[in-house]
Image 1 (cartoon, helix red, strand yellow):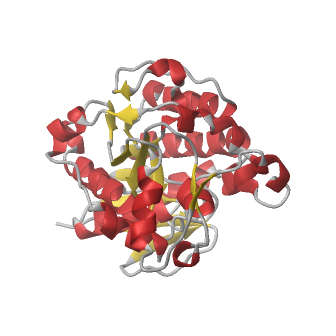
Image 2 (tube, one colour; image 1 turned 120 degrees about the vertical axis):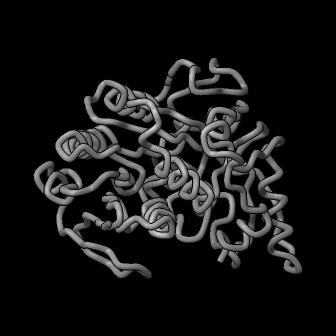
Length: 304
């Protein structure tokens, strides 16, 4: 019997690479759509094309039982202009091929009014432009005739995760960082990408038993003070002493012309001033204990 096949959209990004690797370990064969086919440590059936091209996505998805939608507009920008067409193309391909679409959700769909602990039933109440786009994308998933799955997580960190708060702000420079930055004084959820990818793979293994549209929350690593992540990173960099300082939020405006990530970051400041923890009880009821790499091990990989 041939292995089940999964199409990865965004395989050249850190989350796409990690999910492809986790699925491959579970016996899936991997196909990928990319403008520039790259190298991978496992066999990949490459399809050249753009994730916004519905015809190219549909062709690449033929024979696939899963589509992982990890494609994102570059530079943390143009979510509505590019992100919505990408998702529409992926949903059309999933419906045509009969595949289930897997989607990494985030916390942007919530707001300070959501409370400190959110689960899969917490209403989406975005107050930001990015949050509104993400809520619209999740509404598209829920309304689609295709089978879909959302796994929501906090801010990504890990090896190769470049456009992230960890890599761009908290520990910019990795092992050579000169200053570590705290971004607020509230609890914050972090997701180590290989753990999140493993959770996706475990859900993929039971996807036939899941509802047509399923949503789960991934708890990840919880920083209960807003400083714990920076302090753990400081310990990971020992014996070199790296100071911890508050992030100067005014800098986002000055740096905007030079750092696209920071240009778009200001509106998400609320996530650093209000605690927002993800309740993962439904996920663990489905797959057992959530995959969880120790924080020192995860930080060593992320810093390197």
